[in-house]
Structure formats: C-alpha cells, structure tokens
Image (cartoon, rainbow, N blue to C red; front, side, top):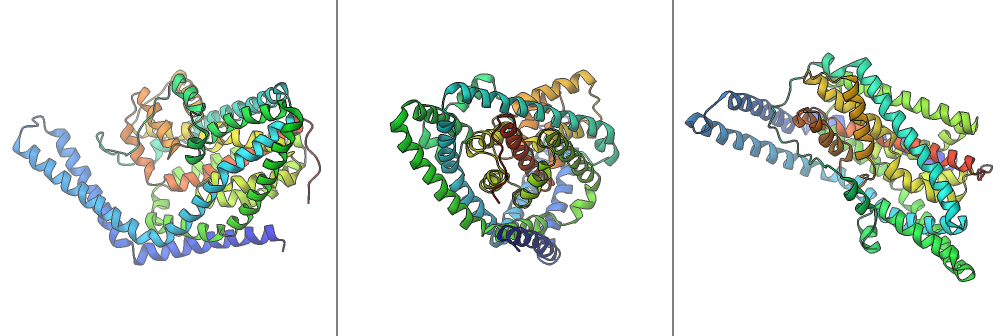
Length: 461
C-alpha cells in the first residue's frame, strides 16, 4: 500500500470509528443533556405560543411568561455549555488539526501565488488566465444554484416533512449580512498584508500576491532571487503539510465522534427526507461536474477524481474545505497541472467557486419557504437565485457563511428568518457534503483551466 493510500485508509477508518464512538457516547453519556435540551425546547415553544396570543404586554400573565422564558433559555444555554465541555477531548483533536492547517494555508497561498504569477510573466497573461478562471467559476456557480432550485421544486421537502415551525421571534444566532458592492470591493483590497495573513483572508492575500508577483516579474533579473526564495519557501511549507496531514486521522476521529455524540443518529431519522434529497442532489452535481470535466479532460478526469479521494475525505469529515487545501494543491500538481496555474486558480476558487455551498443556498432557502407554506413565483425564485449569486461571492471567511447569506436573502422575500432554526441542528452534517463538493469543483476547475492554457502535462507519479 502506497503512503497516500495508507493515509486515505486511516482517515476512512477514523471516520467509521468516530461514528461508532459518537453513537456509544450519545446513548450512554449525552442522552441526559440532549433530553434536557429537547424538553426545554418544547417548553420554550409552548411559552412563545402563549406569548403570541397575549395582546396586552403589561398584563401580569405576560410578565410571568417572560420570566419563565428567561429561565428556560438559561437552562438550555447552561446545558449546552456542559455538553460542549464534555465534548472537549474530542473537539480538541479536530481544533488542533484545523489550527495547524490555518497556520499553513496563508503562507502557502502567498508563496505559491507569487511564484506562479511571476512565472506567468506579464499582466496580459495573468488577465487571460484570470478571465478563463472566472468564466468557469461563474458558470459552475450558476449551474449549482439552478440545480438546487430545480431539485427542491421537484422534491418539495418543506411540504412533505411537515415539521413543527419555530416561533417567529426565535433567535437563531445567525447574523444576516447585506453586503453592498462597496463593502465587497473594499473587503477584497487589503489595508494590511500582515492583517490579511493573521486573519486568513484568502481573497486579500490573493490580491496582494498578484501585485507582488507581477512586480517581481517586471524587475527582471533581480526578481529571479525572489522567485527562487518563495519557490523554496513553498516546498518547505508543503513538507510541513506532509507532517500535519499525519494528524488528519485523529482530527477526523474527533470531529465525527463529537458530531454524532452531540446530534445522535435520531436526527437522521427526523430529517432523513431532507438529508437524503440534499445529498442526492449533491451527487447529481458531482456527476455533472465530472461529465463536464470529461468533455474537456477526457478520461483523465477519472484519474483526477481518484487522486482527490484523500482531500475529499478530509473535507467531508472535518466539514472544512480549507482543511483539504494543501493536499488538493499537491495532488493537482502531481496530476500534471503546472504550479503557476494551480497557485493562481485554487485560492480564487476558495472564494468564488464554492459549488456545494451554492447548491445548498437555493435548496435551503426554498425549503424554508415551503415549510412556511410560502409560494414563490418563478420570477421571484430566479430573482432569489441572482441575489444569492452576488451575495455569496467572497464571504468564504465568514463563519457558517451559507447560513449567513441565506438569512440575508430570505428576509428580502418576507420569509421568516426563524426558519433557519429548522436547519441549524443538521447544518454540520450538511456542511460535510458541501465541503467535499467544493473540493471536487475546485480541483476540476484547476485542471480545466490548465488544459485551456495548454499547461496540462502527464502525471508526476
């Protein structure tokens, strides 16, 4: 068994063992906490219902209900804190791994992109590659959004599941963002490279790296020293990546154990229809992406997917496509993509080409509308799609980015934001599929742009 296959095997094994451990913990150690939270949630819904029926907010009954509500909310919060504390040994494993990955990603993007752009040479070539890259990204994003729209209209999970609706005043904890064009553009441009590196703002690092790389190429002979230096830095960071990836199975074990211990497998039965239909739509998107890749890359697309097993597994089990970034980069170069194309396309993909997240946004937004019995016309649905297309770009660094974008979008169509509470419980399970899909989308995009540029060579191993 080769080293790569051995690591993939251990990651898969850790995933299975994590699920088993999580299930045992959920039944034996976390049932008390989960039952207490579930009972309190039911009590909270009853109180909210009574409050909505009261007209006079100065009545004694209203004040006693509010006091009771505060007490119930406090109980839920305290129980969740106790549950999280008990999960710390498991979450610590995945937290350390994700922090190690974040430690690597920013310097890796900077070093490789500077070298890549400097090797491309002039600004015209950078513009040409950038144009082809954005053409693919926009097309793939639009396809993903449209597929989500079509599938949710075919399945209608919101109507079929008939879930009890959360109270309209429930606090989901999701802060909606209305990102204007001015905010978006000013957010792209870094005010400090040090700050962008410290906060892992990939898009800002990309912008600075483009300027630095083009300038390095422009100074000619003196620039070669810079190129050689950053090339060496990139190789050192990739070596560090190899060390960090050895910790991946432990991180996967901890992440899966924590998710199943907290959520339990009962959430799968409650939301089985939604989860099944969403993952079915996601697999269809995988098929479409691979088939489009096949039209351009021919049979080599299957070799590419074979190489991406490990990054996909890491992204899926940690629910973070960023965790798979260094390994994805390495596998693309081994597949035959030139480093200058990989280092240019892949970082941009992490901000502009989140195919899994795109599909989820239309699917989830219309699921919430269906749950509330809100009919949206074809024109309204297309408008929603275009709004999601614009507001979703460049927010990859925002925590729970998909939910944040959905919160801002559904409010535009008078769909209660409280409907997000229907999804928060299962969002970690859905995020696993989204993250894996983002890795597939970005790897195919990089290979396709390499092919279009005539920079796709034979595999390195």
